[in-house]
Every structure is written in structure tokens, then in C-alpha cells.
Length: 298
Image (cartoon, rainbow, N blue to C red; front, side, top):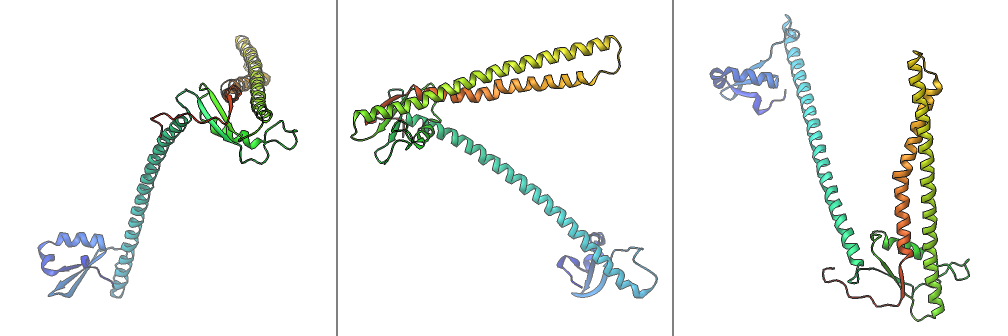
């Protein structure tokens, strides 16, 4: 039998405060009373389901009681650990939310600082593109008319966070090259973004036209189904034909699709169109030294 310190009680203490001994028995399952620091009596809770008339079963009853108490304590401990796990998980989620909020604030500040670093005292955003180390500027299929796509990808990345209302200056560092090559680079750059702008503008017009058509179809279907329902109710027709129910469902589908094209797809297309327009209107320079930075830009 294993005993813990809290299960050992002196006989003198038991005589003075037996209710305390009883509480320990309820908590621990049994208590050993000591006389002169030697085991004297064993006290355990009474359970008539375990205690029988046969004296030989008394020890077995005690063992069953002890096992029950151990199981109950383990269950209580497990519930406490689960509660602790829930508290720990909640605290971790709260800390994670705080870190995400801090990351959001830092990212906004970083974006603002990045945009400010591109804007010079002349009020324009300067994008520098180093082409001196590029072996071949043009696509191998274009007869030296179209620059490689990765050059435009770099420019797109640099100007992604720049507000569209800020004018751009794209400075190509090409070294000592002929004016003919400079003119080809400038033409390739401007043609690329002007074509994208026209394409995005055309897509925006088509999207707007389709949205209006869907909206008109949806409204017509909704009006027809509503009038039909009102007429049938006035004629006291209990069963409305399925076709009118389906017509009303289709009307809401068309209306929702038109709203999606107006406010979601249209917004994304407008952003892409304005970004392309900003680059199509950019001023192209070659081998220009960068102007002095603002004093407040690090």
C-alpha cells in the first residue's frame, strides 16, 4: 500500500479534529492514524456495496475503494489538463492575433516608406532599370523590337505599390549606346503598356456591357415572375407553376452576376487599366543621374 504524507495523521490530531480526518478520507480514500509515529489505525470511507459480512472481503473492499478514488482523481486531473489546454490554446490564439495585428501595422508602414523612397522632390516616382549587364534586351523572335518579358515584370513589381496619380519617370541605364537603340527601347516600353491599357479598357467596357445585359434580364425575369404570382394569388390559385418559381430563381442569379461584374470584377479591371495607363504615360529617360533624395527619406 502506497501512502503519501497528507494521508498520515497523528492520533492526537484525530482526537482534536476528526472532521478534518473525515475530509481527508473523502479526498484520498483512506487515512493512516499514527500513535507514537507508528501505524495504529486505518480509516477509510464506508460503502455498503463493497463491505460484506465476510471478514475476509474487508481488505478487498479497501482495495476496490482505493482504486475508485485513484480513478476519480485521475479523471479530475485529466479534466483539469483539458481546461488548462483550452486556456493555453486561447492564450496562444490571442498572442497570434496580436502578432498579426502588429505585422499589419508594420507592413503598412513599410509600404508607405517604400513608396516615399521612390518619390523625389520633383513629386514624381523614379524607377531605375539597369540594362548594362543584360546580354540581350530583346525577345529572340521580335527582330529587336520587343524587350524581354522579365524586364517588364521587374518594372511592374517596382511600381505595384505606387499610387496611380503619381507621375512616373523610368530611367534606363544602358551605358554608351546609339540613339537608335535608345529609341527602340523607349518605343518597346511605351508600346507594351499602351497595348495593355487599350486591352484592359476594352475588357472593362465589355464587362460593363455584359453586366448591364445581365441586370436587365434579371429585372425582366423578376418582374414577370412577381406579376404572375400576384395574378395567381388574386385568382386564388393555390399551386403556383414550377416555371414561375424557376424564373424567379434565375432572375436572382442574373442580378447577382451583374452585381459581381459591376463591383468586383469591374473594380479589379479598373485597377489594372489605371496601372497600365500610369506606365503608358511614364516619362522615359536614359543614363540620367538620380536627383537628391528628400531629407526625411532614409
